[in-house]
Image (tube, rainbow, N blue to C red; front, side, top):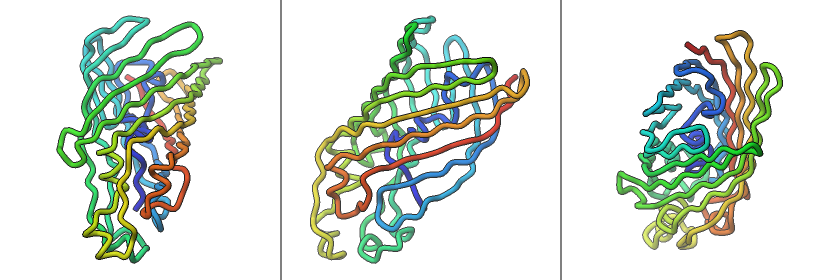
Length: 248
């Protein structure tokens, strides 16, 4: 089973559909996701993704997360938010004998602040969130600039961004303790904080006034702090999602 980097699409950033793709207050749908992890001998996985989007003046909910607006106008949107991060490591799901000797890394609930600033030339999107379940006690900061292009029923939103992960977060998911090293034969490893740049592209097309199809993907170039881990054998992580939605 494959999982993706925390906030690597934050389950496509705590949203199976980006907020820019929701034209009405409520939409529901279904899609599939293809997930690629940097862990050794983890196969790509195709999994179903439910799509539920809700937007009001005070609250929002998208995919795996939701929030409450502290400030909400056409230019600026600041909210308290929380989302489920499915990133985890299950030793039994690896085909690598050494990785099967390691401890499990759990999924968690992240919570913090998110902010969007809209301009005629694109929009800034950023979020700062911490682990609320004391699994890693880590923090993640995501910062991106995106531009939305619309032509008829087609909307394209390319973006470039960077994600900062704290030492605690990286060490929990990519570190190897002394006890694990003795048991597995892997080198002991302590990960530091890091910056990982990424490219993102979302697309949607309105089939009718109510029905739309969407696609969303992100490619993340992993830092040396992750790539140097004996648990990892790739220099990148990524995720793709596509599906159909109905808007009310």
